[in-house]
Image 1 (cartoon, one colour):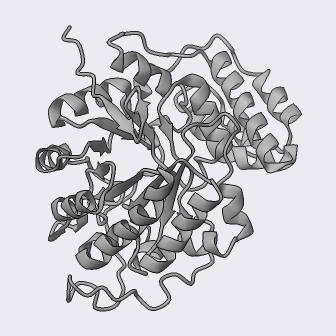
Image 2 (image 1 turned 90 degrees about the vertical axis):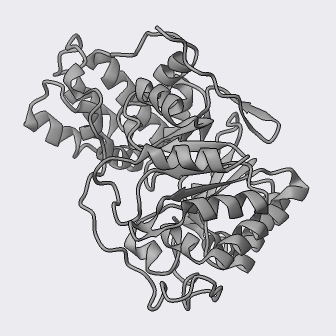
Length: 379
């Protein structure tokens, strides 16, 4: 077996080994989930995307979202913004108050409520505005020694690719690395990711390029690095209900072949730990267990668990309830290997991207869309 290429990735002065980044996922990558993932492996774990305006205005929900564990390093925070001045203020606030060690800029979100305001995956089309935003973030972060990275998609749709030009602009603005999800905004989470775009971007830039899209198993990460030359990988949906994927990734990048195939008993122990961490973060056991409900189906995917117990677990409100239903399961049930390599989490159909009126008419128009920063959003 050929030994995997071992990319040498750094974030500022910090080595990133293995070269793995947890992608921000709304409602998922809170401090509890990140801690759980860190207990299984190493890498960079990015918090949920937060809106620059909400951060500057000290929105209570947003401030809770940028909570980090005491031993969490680097503290990675992803920002979404459309106005360069607001982005600058947000980054200055982060630097002045020591809120994070790393800032990732979101230019990849395909969600309509984001793109219809010109944000996320829609924004790189406006090249001047995109460059101004990245420059503002880098200029505000540099005095504090905070590296700024960029996450983006191939483009709006197949007729409007932006990734090569946006990558060059991000590099010129001083971004530490660029991560590319190999889908357009129009694809959303459908179909297959185009890894050839990641390879093309890697061949174009001098700064590191990370690849994202369809990494369901650790061996997918090795294959992506081999096929594209990427300097690292970004993992999103593949770790849903499987935080031990980060142990597999650490093993893979170290050249080891062992992979985690936990029994149902080991999985329920991880589920219990996840719910406990959520309860600790949210302040009450009930709130933690209720928030945990969304994870039940992911953890139990493929296991021989009846619909009645699945429904009961997904309606539980206390740790004792979880324990009661866990006790009814066969702890020795083997991991369902037929689920390996299969998509997890959101899968949907491609669709037309919601954009501000006239957005595609002039790529050099750097006007901030009216109302783009006014939505009171915690992410």
